[in-house]
Length: 318
Image (cartoon, rainbow, N blue to C red; front, side):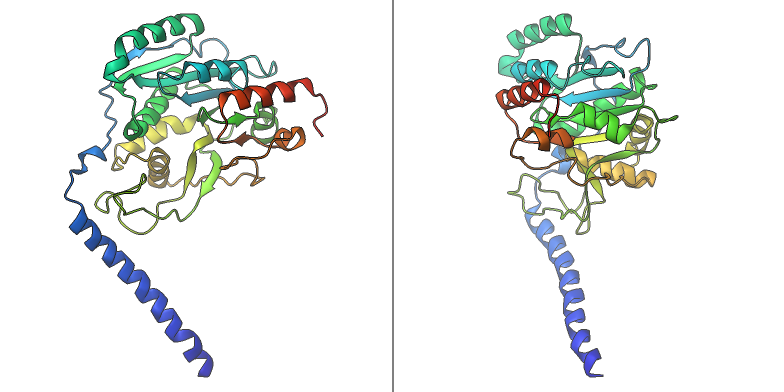
């Protein structure tokens, strides 16, 4: 009886606190949410048109891996560094790799001259895909769904794709040989992995960069999702996510939205065999350490270039 009393009242307090937190969240939103929800209601009914496209990018032998890289229109330097480093399509002669940068429209005050530069860059490198939506933070979900749409339309026979941000180091050799294993008889299906996040707390503070109105996503936690800085998936998921999106309320946090679509599909992200493969945070550089990772975040272009050249010149990293 004494043991029951010891645990009963703390348990009641925890459950009551959780219940009140949900109630206060509702009240908080009702009192502080006079703004229109339209800015969060980012739909992708495919009303956007291609300005730049590469419809033949995956013609011929189907790629084993497609690198899908969202990038701001003005970031030419980082695109060039990625082309020279982990985005080099010839970095692994044993598998076919394709690289695509995805863009929206430049800001209005820079549109004329910058758009002409993008067209010249496209003619030279044949790796830019652009649609006519504003390239802004609140439109990242539109950009992600654009990537899924392009992949399903123009590269459906590829085996895998990786969505990866521009401030990342990517170890293509470790990604291909340790995780994806091209020697396997069949590619995986319904597969997505990266830094898998469980019980992500939904931010209700309107001052937060990650604010989410209760009316769009109720509850305390997001569904399980994979961090948007870099995730790998089997290409069959592109069309499935597009189809699921028709039934899922759109939100502007693109990785959360992909997680919501996966929940609608009944698909759980796969935990990587090594939890250190996908790093959310900066990692102190050493040849040995970076040779064992798949991705590392928060790198400037000059840092990426130095690391890549240093790894390339060393045969034995450890």
